[in-house]
Length: 183
Image 1 (tube, helix red, strand yellow):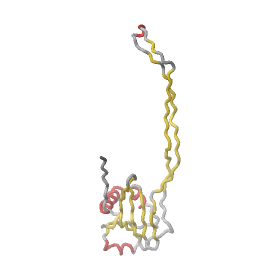
Image 2: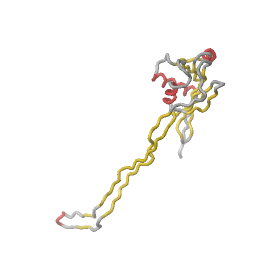
Image 3: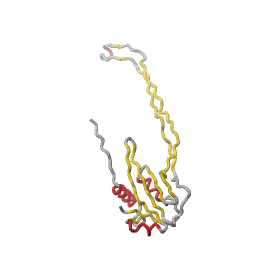
Image 4: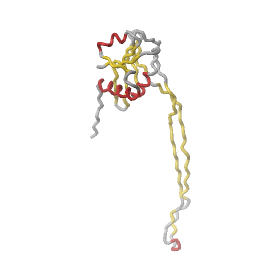
């Protein structure tokens, strides 16, 4: 009997994973940690607050990482949020073909050859791999929800590293500080 184990992540575990990865790539001064009592004063300035970071799993698919961001009052808001992507080649087919055929199928046993039998000869043809690839453009992350009036942004990523990279290129102007909300 096959038994499946489900991965369960609490918000605390997910936010901790994000924090640990952030500290690998930057110093502690770049990202502040605040509690809910400091949220309103922080959001009055040119600041970004990561309210939640959630890891969701689904059967048959990889983990998805969602980041819930609250945008400060002085941060510049674009009309829409779209993260950049990168282009790579995706291989569709990789074929290696081997064809063999016996030329003759007679067994020859003679004493001159020390009694060894020869069982025909093979002719082998090998085609080199056929490479069929298609260029694919993959976005860094998807903007699931962007509420300009509510100053809320929800982004979804394939990895924690993609989420960290997106923090460096958010379209909210210059010189904003990023805070993590301690739950």
